[in-house]
Length: 150
Image 1 (cartoon, rainbow, N blue to C red):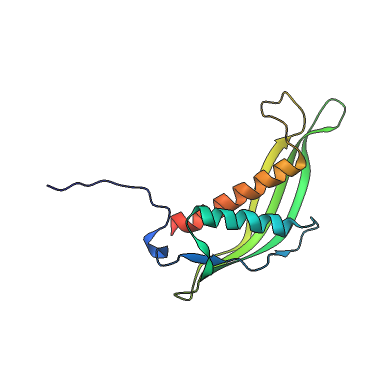
Image 2 (cartoon, rainbow, N blue to C red):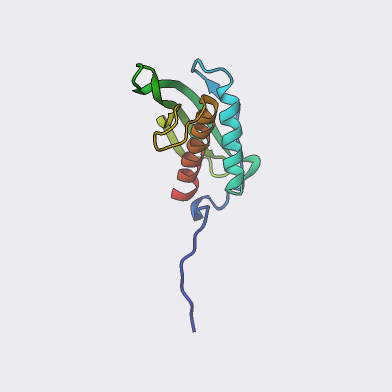
């Protein structure tokens, strides 16, 4: 008798030989102070969530190209009620065990819309909360895309 089924795996077979990653210091070409530190923490946390330790099996190199906060919707007094926070990155993920580039993105962009006033369907967020959410979502999207799609 045989049993067949499908299961969810967080790492593809093509990356099964990689158990660790190094994230070199992140270059920050934006005007946002210390953004590279916050992004680095979010990326390390997400790689760790996927079961990868810090080490030399692979390297994930990132440059912050741009970061901005733009008003998206104005209220009655012509004051912003909603903002869009946007980060633009370039990154390379390289398999050092097989000397192969797994992913090379020149223009990765992610945004997070947030309200600063009550009663708009979503709870208001401070700029810091919105930035933290953006970095967490960015890290999750990038690393899930790398780990699960290959």
